Image 1 (cartoon, rainbow, N blue to C red):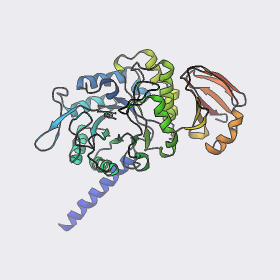
Image 2: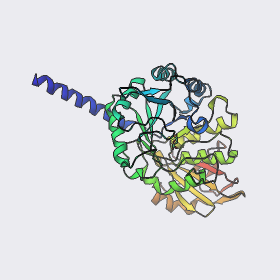
Image 3: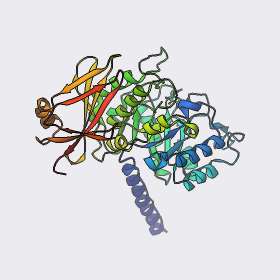
Image 4: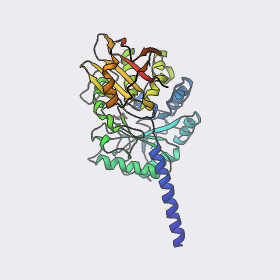
Length: 399
Ligand code: GLA
């Protein structure tokens, strides 16, 4: 009898270790997908999610790498007498398992949302006190990704609250990416590696280049500014999350959206599209599926770009890539074009020491024009549009 008990305990420990390893291996590159919140808010339903799954496949978004289809707030309506979470039966009549199956059959992964507080930000039931039960329910539905918010936190310790859900997910028997969403309030970059795979660093994004709201909403430029110091905390399996994408939602110009996408790629940010994929225009699709830019985001080295030159309204950002290459963004915050006549040579020492590049000439490849612009032995002559960027990859010549 004792022997049997021991064996069971050993088996459980082995399985748990295996699962926990799987957890640690998730999100080796920044997660990519789609989330309902930015465009649809509380207006979520299985119909919408199934249509979005179809659209992710039809538009080529899935093949470009967008794999997690995440239902944000408002899918949940209450708890039953046993404490089980109840999805809204009118909006999700087939149930979450069936929806998960539909999503998986499309070659996508299933994401869901909850909150560490007693209620979500939209006052739906949160997971406080129900973490194990909720994690088990998610696993039984085939959930692959959980975004976990911080409203109604009731004075909990953030690290402890997120660790409780992290442990519950690890024990659920299913590898689930854990997205921490406490808006950077408790500096999660200092404690969340190993607890979650990504953590929000700011208040909620707004669909604007530069704007701030007194309730905490922030535009693209302010978000970028807040990431500059955080590069050392990002790496495979643990990413800073400057919030979801607004590309295609109509609030910014084409050049501003290109800046938004390029910089999220440079920052090794999760790329969670937040627009209506079902009827996006060509311009939006071309931005979101730019394979050259996505490759910078998904680079195996997993380094976040750092701002290595700040000239006030003109900035240069550098992201070290695998195999000694580097991505560079020239970012123009002004409303006038920035005429570049850029001498790469002056930066050689910086690249060699800070970004650990070999001292050599590189071929310069423009990631939006998709063309070679010569090499780093010559000056770069380009014009950066107002509120726009020029983004290049320095390709090793010995490749
Ligand atoms: C918070 C989060 C958002 C979104 C909403 C949902 O504001 O930061 O991303 O999930 O809650 O209520």
